[in-house]
Length: 147
Ligand SMILES: [Zn+2]
Image 1 (cartoon, protein in one colour):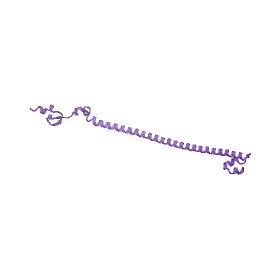
Image 2 (cartoon, rainbow, N blue to C red):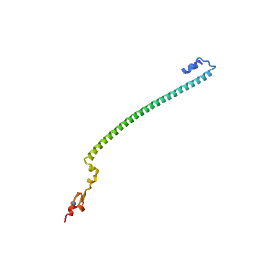
Image 3 (spheres, rainbow, N blue to C red):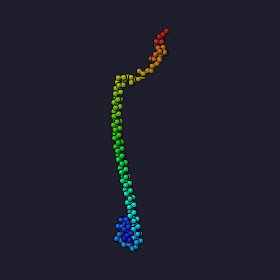
Image 4 (cartoon, protein in one colour):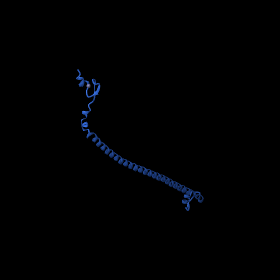
């Protein structure tokens, strides 16, 4: 029995030493049970280790995701702020340009703007004069004065 115990793994030896077994068979049965228990515990430990590692990985991945989201949000907020500033700048610029245009068009040529039709009469062709102008051959006073 002692030799049997000495042939076992240190873990098993520690659990079987200094105990009395009625027979070698009982000792072997006990050794097997303990071996199974140890193996089971080791397996459980390995599984726990795997789970722990997986959890850590998951957590660090989650942390990375959260970090990435934070960065993205920051970027979006910055961009939104920049965009808002840009919009305001553009609006200001448009307002200025519009004011300048109003000065350019309305004040010196107000009549032109308010009565565009008066100056925008389409040119017509006079066959008598053979030119483009303000009258047609039917309205041509030069032709009408001809004998
Ligand atoms: Zn004419």
